[in-house]
Image (cartoon, rainbow, N blue to C red; front, side, top):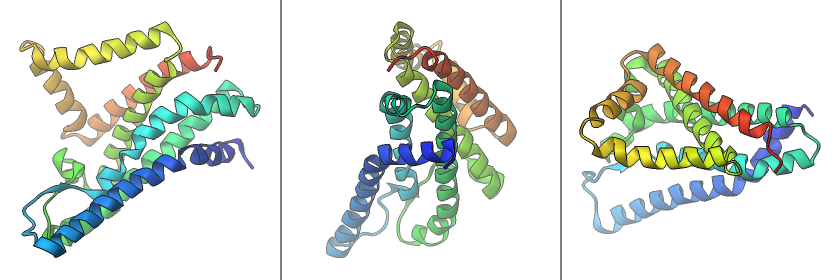
Length: 228
């Protein structure tokens, strides 16, 4: 068994409880909506988040649980820090690609079938990624998911280092300050527009991958000196 395959199997065992919990939460929401519709009727005007999008919540656990608890387990099994980090990147890429594909495959079902009965919010439409076609939707999503995973990895990999806590403090402070100070608010909005609502697929994808590489580089600096 290759190291990457072993890492994938071990990471799945670590994450499967979170995957089943998220899937159960989404399934419970679907069942509740069906029961309400059958019991009291529903005119379909109450919008809800796409079920495929809701499953993407699992990526938050992937980016936080693995850097916190998976490192010790893998190193105790004899893997080097480099082996751990390379395997982590492979796992991230697989989950990011998997959820990107899920949303792309689910979108036409939602647009042509479910939309006849219920209004839904889908990130593909909200961010305007549908203009890029199916391949473009997959690519843009992949970049954004990798950005999310890499950011969480940077934050949680540095929990045992003073610099890591500084990053947490800076992020927590930047969010309210950037959204409340009038002079900064337009720059924050422009940043999000460029990153998530970009009309250029390659520019948007390139920015997400570039930022992902920066965050992952920072994560590696924490990881190579990490004890447990």
